[in-house]
Amino acid sequence: MASLYLSTGCTPRASMSPNANPSTTPVSSNPKPFFRELQQKVPVKIDVSKAIKKASQRLVDAFVDSTFQFIDQPLLPSRGNFAPVDEIGEAVRITNIEGEIPEDFPEGVYIRNGSNPQFGALHSAVSFLGRSSNIWVEGEGMLHALYFSKEPNTATWAISYNNRYIRSDTFVLEKARQKPCFIPAVEGDSPAILAAYILNLLRFGMVNKVISNTSVFEHAGKICAVAESHMPQEIDVSNLDTGSNWDVDGAWDRPFTAHPKRAPVSGELVIFGIDAKKPFLVLGVVSADGKRLKHKVDLQLDRCTLCHDIGVTGKYNIIMDIPLTIDMKRVVKGGPLIKFEKDSYSRIGVMPRYGSADSVKWFDVEQFCAFHIINCFECGDEVVVIGFRTADSVIPGPKMGVDEFQQFSRVFKSTAAKKQCSENGIHDRFFPRLHEWRLNMKTGGATGRYLTGFDFSAEFPVINDHYTGIYNNYAYGQVGQSKASSICVPAKFGGFAKFYLNEQVEKDGLIKVEQHKLGRNQFCSGATFVPRLTGSDEDDGWIISFVHDEENNTSQVYIIDASKFGSDPVAKITLPQRVPYGFHGTFISRAT
Image (cartoon, rainbow, N blue to C red):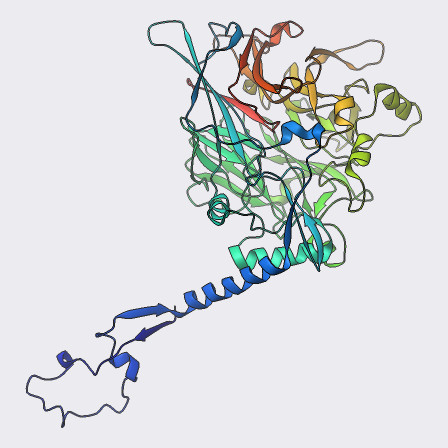
């Protein structure tokens, strides 16, 4: 590193012979620079590269501040519970409980992640280059946690609630500056997106801020919050403090999926990370004890597919290569960064656990989009993949210049409209339905069929995690509320569904579905399955979820007996403040 030493004296006397006469001391043929000779009297050291970098950053900051105007994106009344909330501070004891928490409910913490913009709203940035905007899945991550413990020597439940921002480096940076600093770089006019990429990189060394707002997972005792644009961040679940990035002891150096999967039997964690530059998708296998990365491979895809989830079976990893792509070259040509390419291909890859790129067996299937896999398992020569399928993507959102409420109202049409679409052979673009793919490893053939009809849409699936990667009978999801979602983006979910995966309804060949509907203007988020510790059946446990009542603006946590799914919740726990709608939740048992 280049350095400049400033000093203000002669050559130090310590360098002379004790008997030397200063007037006759030989002069070096390569005399030291004047400033260097003075270094002992004024020991000031200036790091030139650091000084230049700081000056350059100040110039770039000044340019951004004078050129870009940050504007709050409007929040309509129908989006009221998507608005952010403040941190509550210390954990608060909960006493307002309707019903009873089951005696054999496990001690632990129910924790949910979600977007909670630090400065009150998502933003757009406007300049002479045009406009760029945050999309609806952005916003700093905030954790909401409900703690379940029993009083010592009693069967009395002690319940407390806490919430806290995930304090990433970029969160701390913007908080210190008390304003949004990262120019939105996902959606908008191409020149504005390109400028955002360059300027964010120059100012902060990264294109996008670290939001970590999508999910929470546990592996080998580590609890992590993650969004697929960055590495996971460790969380101290006792107080929700943010720790360091989890990079598997330095072996993982790229983004990390929001949905890693624990392989059956081995307990290894199968992960992957996508990137806008090559390598586009890298897959990894983390040891069961979380201490080492046992396998890492570039799958050598020829595009960056915005693959959100991965599947596992006893022997295989399942990769969804969908035509929802991220492409900087497209931006340079004036197109969008993220686009669902309707004329491109879709395929599903089946890869041996420690395979290479060449070992992946690819199955071409009808074009689709799927954000969430429910489960995968092996059945004879076939690998079965079950997930929610749509014909288009709700990410990134409406195109520039298109009214988002008008566009997305078509996503959640009434049941009658859905049936009309089906009868007319029009495959509604955004309506998520349960779908099964069967991939024959022997013949290379692939078949697919819908397991649910147009009566309702559903998303955010969960299962009993003990059945991940093996044959299972049940799955659960949040049911879209058509009327509410038609005037609000993102969607609202007005209840839950239990899918009986292996019970067909004779009249149409679809599977049996049981619903648990919420009350008027009540909506849920972050549902997950909590298995009974002593349970033997797959559905022996509970669905737990945050529920918000928009009429009285109160938030609760519902606990629903999964084996008596249509019955009233066994407990409703009223929270001390509003909890915004969010993304994925999990339950971390104290016995884990």
